[in-house]
Length: 324
Image (cartoon, rainbow, N blue to C red; front, side, top):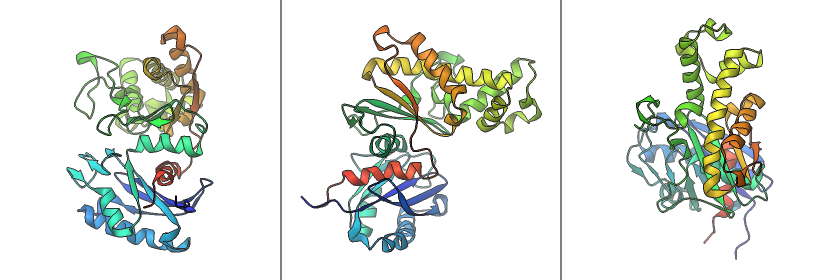
């Protein structure tokens, strides 16, 4: 077997920016760079620009022979096929053969997965899930994503798209909020950053409780504004996090029934609210879960909470790739 090379490349392919990082075996991003995703009308132009951006980073660690592989975290990334498939927020439509294009340009192995799965692999490799075999990562960003690890292996399902826990239905029927997926009542419509902002607008419009959030135009309120207000003791903002955390805790109680995880790990900007959101999650979980799962899992915040967290998560795929 070939010796594993000392570096991998992590790529966080987002709808606005794509960030590249060279990562060593200690989980340190030794150099990074970025380009604007939306500037490239075709996937070929994007890959050419990406490789041009990567070249000085690769040269800086001694050349491509020092790189074990590339891991890419991307919306609608399919690990089995190395593709991005029908990603709504990217310029390239349909099925994009991303891994093949990068491998042709750079000559090293490439693996692709979605961003939440990349976060789970990152936690297992570098973060708070080191040594764990059964856990669920829940990413709280613009949407809600998840990466599920059972018996030490990430769950991909039959088609590479397993683990869409953000799209379990929490409120059924017409009462549920419309989701970007086209259905109503999905978890992410309530517990994402955008969901928190929607909750804030609903509460402010249906109650007359005093709140510093009323100083802002309703359509301008963000989850960060809610977090800042809650930190100042604003009761309406605290109520918003109580509502959000309760729903997340109830969802986790359902998730525990199929995988009995030793931990739920939360990743993303909402976790900066700390106990304002984590305590309601724990409480609602124990109130809702089947008794045999009560008090068993840990509720943790990501160990990769830094500006390079997504790059680190994606890079972890690069260590798993075999060099031919």
